[in-house]
Length: 96
Image 1 (cartoon, rainbow, N blue to C red):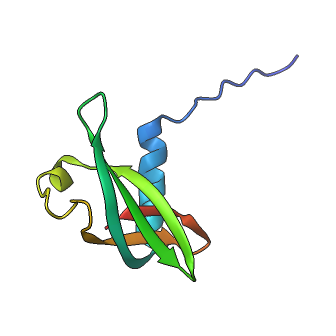
Image 2 (image 1 turned 120 degrees about the horizontal axis):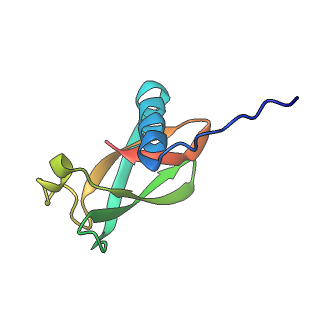
C-alpha cells in the first residue's frame, strides 16, 4: 500500500522572507539608482532600480514596505540607493 504525501506549497510571503534572510546573511552591497516608481492596484508602491556588477546592468523591482514608503525622497526616481545582491546569483537582489 502506497503512502500519500501532501505537499504544502510555500506562500509568497514565506518565499520572500527566505530570500531576504539569505541575502541578509550572504549578500554583498553595491550602489544602485532608482529609475521609476509605480502604484499597483492594491495601492502598494513598486520601485524599479538598476545596478551594475562587472560591467553588466541588472534591473529589478521591489514592493516598498510601510517603513520605506514613509521616506519618499529616498526612493524617488534618480535617487542613489544601496542594493544587496547574491554573489552566486547576481540577479537576486533587494534594496538596502
